[in-house]
Length: 334
Length: 256
Image 1 (cartoon, one colour):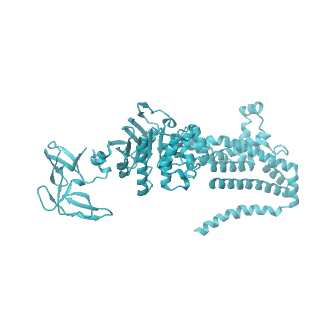
Image 2 (tube, each protein chain N blue to C red):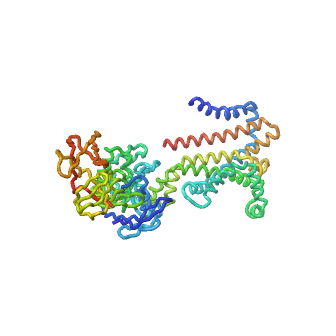
Image 3 (cartoon, one colour):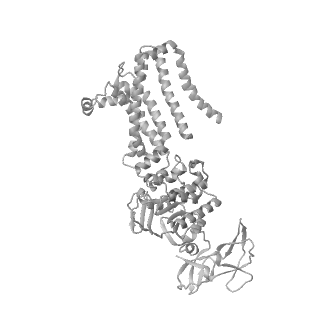
């Protein structure tokens, strides 16, 4: 188990603040966050490239905090892959074993075969395609049997087809060799596809850390919800135990959650909460939906009062002029 | 725009090529053969090649770690050191030679001369003059060579278990190789052509401190134009020859 305890790192005006993370053995943990959130700084701190100001990095209870980077035994795949251009693919992959005086073993053969790079071993990295380079960089990091694999947006430069192939390869390898990994991405699909758990890092702070599905479906606060692409976030005041007055809508919404009368809340009305009704019924609102045709779905925008709602609908879906909201799909944010 | 910019590039050829060609106005085959056969000229050639090679090797020996440190680490007085690299270029070589001469006339310099090595008017003096002149520029070239190597290669090497020394030898150095070879050649060529500081420290003693540039100066002073031209052509041949070989090596390195 990998534990980051109260990690603090100051880099000029930027700082990572009280980072707490637990990554179980065999778990792929995604760190999500906007540019400049401190994702790469966090990776550098874990790798031992940046000195942290306080906190601990523990693996199976052993303290790695002050250990030199070369002694940590972590695998790393950076965004630019950094394949050594003066070495062949084989020399690149075996670099980690060679500097420790070890010879290539069956594990290397197995990894090379699994990644489909056996035919590339004598070539120079410059002659490889983008996808082949990714495979080589990944295998180079894995061949030393790292206690923790760190990936810094390694697939960001690939097109979607190659990206999916790499996701599948990583998952295959992870299952077969029980790899524990911490990876950075700003690709939400990538995080959802690959990770068991995910954390959202914004302005140097972890805003939410939970199971990936839960993180995507139940963001805890406005920052996380907005980062995950949620719209329809409004402020309101509880007018009864199960009803809230949304200022922008100038209307009440029924909720499932038990509320404190008079208290202010921020609500997230998920797309799945929006239901187009065939006819007007109790609690429904009359709307004038505008439809924008996008590649694979239609974007629907409508207003209630001054509140603008956005939702996606598949192209076949019939739209009506009445909307109601499912209580279960209205979330309350911190 | 393209044409006018290419014209500017051709100005290089016109200026330097023109100057070299103009030397041939006084070229005389007989004098050239005589110069090559002359033991005094051959002594100058050997002396220049030996001292320039030693000075360049010494400069590189110190420039490699110094250039790497300036490229990779942050430390106190780094900016001052960075500025001082241009010191030999800012003051003229003659002034630099005079400064070295002044140093050997202060108590510490006198003690070195008496107890360690007498640099004034000696072989060591020539090497010292050349070394002091080229060291700064050598560090600057080596630093630039390491600046061109992305530090993420070293980070990867470390995470794969390489010690800082292994990372330097197996990653940084091979990746900076082309730039370093360029630095060596330019340092050597600059040392070969060094005149002002050598004149100040080592003087102009035939068969002792007469390097090629000094020999050119001495023959010109004696109005011996034909030998001067021969010496100039020998110096150009060695200098440009070294640059040509370096270019070929670099090209081979890049293609390999």
